[in-house]
Length: 211
Ligand code: AP5
Ligand code: MG
Ligand code: ZN
Image (cartoon, rainbow, N blue to C red; front, side, top):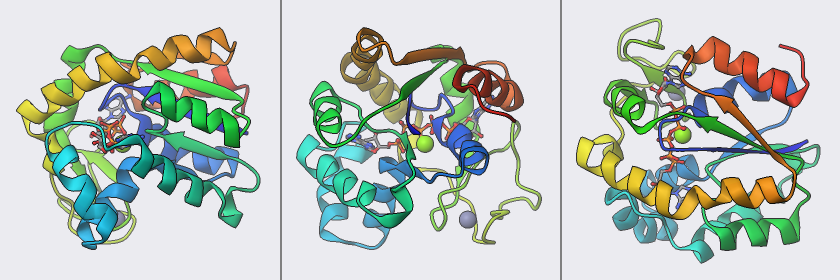
């Protein structure tokens, strides 16, 4: 199954994707994680993306589409994948429709007020991409990634003013994708405010998979 996770910054796409990869047996692809890794490694892509990300703006379509195409062509994607954070613009969605058959777009609905609390407590591992929350989803040992043992940190774009800019970008440019996939009959929307366990349950019901 090729699944898209839609939702505002902080809606819980990455958290849900990490759980669904186990249940569905397919990899998840986070364009945000790929871009953060490129920045950390100082690659050409990272240098081009950094200024946009630091301001809460979208990275230009041609850069993101190029990296997505390369990623879905890798062998582990042959049985399907979960897209977390792509597409984010109508041109990205149109390009995706040219290269893949999308089965479902699952939208996590979370109001802006809830997002601020989530972002202020979020911690991430820049090595393996794992995501935590100091209250909602803490790691077993404070400050240390459960999965790989690296220190977990505050994301550069989780400063309150950047979060506001990311939310504005979301409403303006990415939210229209809800209508795009509804028109294709592929949209499923779930409540993303009821804790991580319930979000997984609602997602599984919507997708018709066992949890
Ligand atoms: P990206 O990394 O994709 O960020 P985002 O979409 O802003 O989403 P987040 O990763 O912030 O949130 P999330 O929905 O994954 O939530 P999470 O699970 O972490 O993109 C970053 C930047 O890269 C963009 O701004 C852009 O510049 C660039 N970019 C990326 N893709 C691009 C593209 N396609 N085109 C152009 N530019 C692109 O959860 C948040 C917190 O809440 C965590 O602490 C978590 O533990 C907690 N939490 C999660 N679920 C729940 C729940 N149900 N209840 C309570 N707490 C929860
Ligand atoms: Mg994420
Ligand atoms: Zn880690």
